[in-house]
Structures are given as C-alpha cells and as structure tokens.
Length: 245
Image 1 (spheres, rainbow, N blue to C red):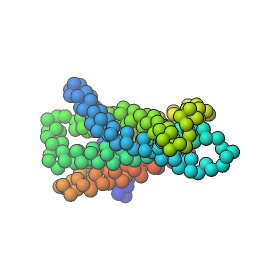
Image 2: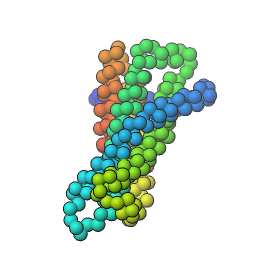
Image 3: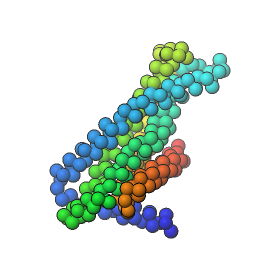
Image 4: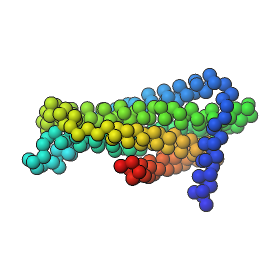
C-alpha cells in the first residue's frame, strides 16, 4: 500500500503543477536560475567523469581485443557506441541523480520544514508550479545538453588515451569513428536523456516537497530520493532498450 500511496501523491503533485502562472516574469526568472544551478553546477563533474570514462573504455577494449584479426579501428567504434548508447546517458545520469537530486530534495525539504512553502500558499501562489515545475523544465533542457557534452568528451578522452598509451594513432581512431555510424543510436540516447532528466528532477522534488519533521528527515528524504531515482533510471534503461532496440 505504501508504494501506491507514494505513486498517487506523486501523480497528484505533477497534476497540481499545471496552472496559470501568477507572474510570468517570476516563473521565467526561477527557470533561468534553475538552468544555471543544474547546468553550471554539474558541469565540472560531468567533464571529469566523461573524459575518464572514454579513456578507460579505450584501454580496457584494447586489452580485450588481442586477436590480430580484429582491426585497431574497432576500438574507436566500441568507444563511440559505448559512450553514446550507455555510458554517457545512464552512468552520467546516475551520477547526476546524486548531484542534482540530493540538492533538489534538500532544498525543498528545508523550505517545507521552515514553512516557506506554507507562506507561498498563504500568499496565493501555487507552490508546486513555482517551486517544482521550473526545476523539471530546466532539467529537461539542461540534462540532455550535459549528456551530449559527455558523449563528445568521452570520445575525445578515448582518443587522447589511445594516443598517449600508444594503443592506436589518432588517424586510426578517427577512421574508426566514421565507420558503421548509426545515427539512430544518437536518437535513442536522446530518448534516454529526456526520460532520465524527468526522473532526476521530479522524484527528488516529490520527496523534498513532502518532507515531514526536522533536519533528520531532510537527510532521509535526500537519501531516498537518490536511491529511488537510481533504481528508476536502471529500470527505465531496460524498458527503453527493450522497446526501441
């Protein structure tokens, strides 16, 4: 019953967001603020993780491809497809669930226990629309952009690692990147990106918005938000792969 209770409250929260804005400028300002917070705040960790993911994929792929019958350019193809299909969308989204999700949950939880949300409701402002909707829309705009950046950086990191370790030359890596490129993989990665962005933003918002108690409950809500978001990301990864591949 607890699962259905949470699911019903989650759907009611999403439904309550869609109302006419009381002040369009106020909502636009909050949306831009959330874009900056989510995008710029998460960019350093995205850069670091993406470059090393690509580098490690190159080294480990070269270690496993020991057969002389397999051309070296195959390493570049594997790095490209791995970053686009799985590593950049899924692994990065799990990291972002911890970075972005915990921030959203703790921010809304602190506003709930300090009665700031109640004050907004008293002033006639729809707190769900003002506090949650800009976060979700900002995540839908910024997170796919971060995943695209991650894919490029991962491929570049793999190229640099291949060159520095002597595994394969840059021209061989570039030739491998151009071979057997399936643009549908990019489209599928964007399907994942938008799905994960919605999960990363809406699930922590639910846990933070419905916090009851004090500071201890905020910590528990943040932890629950990250754990549930990661589980839903992995579940969505399987479902999307089963449907679209």
